[in-house]
Amino acid sequence: MEHIVLLGDSIFDNAPYVSAGSEVLSQLRSRLGPRHQVSLLARDGDVLADVARQVARLGYLDTPATWLLVSCGGNDVLGLLNEMGRPVPTVLAATELLASWQADFQRDYRRMLDTVLAHGKPTAVATIYDSVPGLAPGLRTALAVFNDVIVREATLRRMPVLDLRVVCSDPADYAPVSPIEPSAQGGARIAAAIAELVGTHHPAAPNAVLYGAATGFPKK
Image (cartoon, helix red, strand yellow):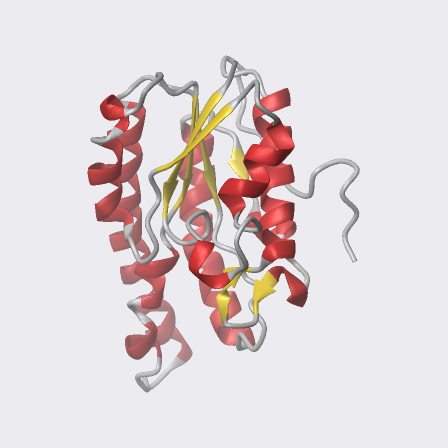
């Protein structure tokens, strides 16, 4: 039996934004069936620094985790939006700012990963999705800088990556009441991709592997 524990932010803890039973947690439990267990420690609004507090609760679960899934970092980037709107004199100056923010994000992401991996459980991480309705092209480009950190750090540690940029690429994948959160459809796609990852990925695989849209779950 697998026991999957979801860590991070509202990508997994999206119940306030969808109808009851269509949140990621319920859809993943339904997809995996009663032989497997899913626990939610992710919290809406949490940032990378908060994951340590979530991980500290692993010892209070009824059964040990067999997989840890982490989707976090989006709120850290959201916290930079005001700064991103500040005028700068040149394109080079803008890229220097991005480089500085990326370095801070990398430091915090590494610290978060080290805390999670210290528990010795098979772990996968998720990228930050970038098809949010109304997202400006410039912000989408800026997100790539932070996603590069996530993929790079996972690759260095030979971890599987759930690429939410591929999983949630349709406008209907985002909740109408809050378009930065997964909708029922988006939650279904995330649940399907997680189920495929934990069902097919061997924790001792020698390479990092990117997982996107689940097999048999066509994209529009």
